[in-house]
Length: 339
Ligand code: NCD
Ligand code: ZN
Image (cartoon, rainbow, N blue to C red; front, side, top):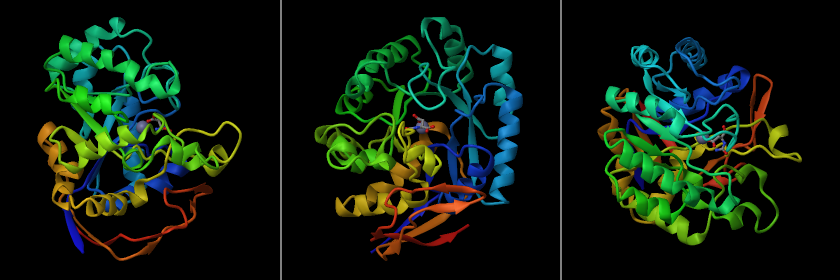
């Protein structure tokens, strides 16, 4: 069986910086035509100069690959002039809002949504998408559900603002999506595959631990329904979030699943198993292109049900990172890429 995808997009990707950037950026560029790059560096990417400099470092790491990094700013109170300046940067995509302290490197995030309404209004007028990590500080399984009223508030207060509910993990989030045209959502591969049982129901699996944590079987079912049906406002975002092995296999494991190098084979297997391969192109590219008016670099990626051996680690530049499906013989693989 074979699936050909046109210009697959990863609408939520962490490529980090320094040696990790050099290791992981080419792995996304190999399979994807473009990706939305998260700004949660230390310090965060929160002004024009930092954004331009980060985009340049990414270009250097890509070594001329046929791949467009779509850059985001870390949300703070921006003036209209700052937002307009960002819009002039080639590849600028949107602004990512993290509630303070909810995930990796988000200490400088937002503490009060009311205080940032002028910036949101300005983004609405300028047509700049808002991307949101939608979790509260409550009980870990309830954090996304507790944030949903906030999405509702934003969707109603800013009807022309394009709001992306990032990496949704619950059936309730899928239901909310259907209530407001200005909401869309990304879904990861791992949240389509896992429940909390896979993470800690048996031996604890640090490489499957991420924020938001995987939820219940009925939540995964709702996410699958949305993705497999080609729901027009649902897009693939891997949330591939590499951490060096010593930060994962330790006491105080960092949150994040490194899925980028296996994301497309993973999606191919999932959509094939569910007889939904006709909708994979919508999920992995067309829905995002339509929603955001994107014209990504032309790339054809051919996937086949030919097994591949997933590396136990990716190592280089002094970094070692463990991918999703590490060490498995995986039944699907990327067999050709045409640019
Ligand atoms: C991400 C990271 O490591 O930067 N971690 C994660 O578990 N997803 C941050 C994020 O997107 O929440
Ligand atoms: Zn993320």
